[in-house]
Length: 207
Image 1 (spheres, rainbow, N blue to C red):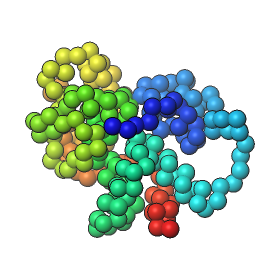
Image 2: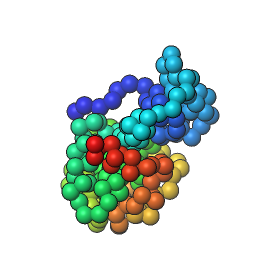
Image 3: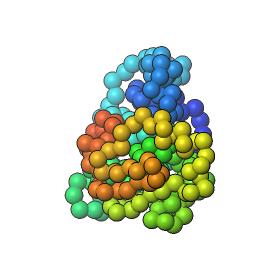
Image 4: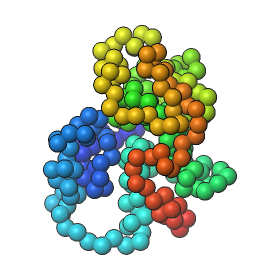
């Protein structure tokens, strides 16, 4: 299964904002954005005005990195969104929010999306009582996510539940005592922490 394995702080610096890829570190003074708020590389501090295409591309890359999705996967999600009723850009964001790994992160069962992806692949969760280990699965309203009983006793998950620093969005319901979460509604753009101009992504793919 392909995935990005390089230094993730460079991704945040390239986009010029926090993508929350390193969990708790992103909420401390050690965050690279706070110390070096410019793009990585030899010419990172050089500023230049982006073309329309460059602006659209950077918006797409920002969203793609935020959710940890590769180029091919992102294009597939866009095609799915384009074939759905409603606005393509909002449909795209909804699909990305409904990914299994993103929901694990949003529920507070992982400190970052990369960690959520790893925990899913390692088989620590179930969906509606059945084993689920595919991070890209799209969940639907009514689905119940649970930490496997065998995993609940681990110090990792106990610490995550106790030290949970994020509040789950309104479209998710969390029961920390039973290590479960339920999808009670579909997410909207307003539920997303990252400022996103999805119309730029639609314009990019429409060329």
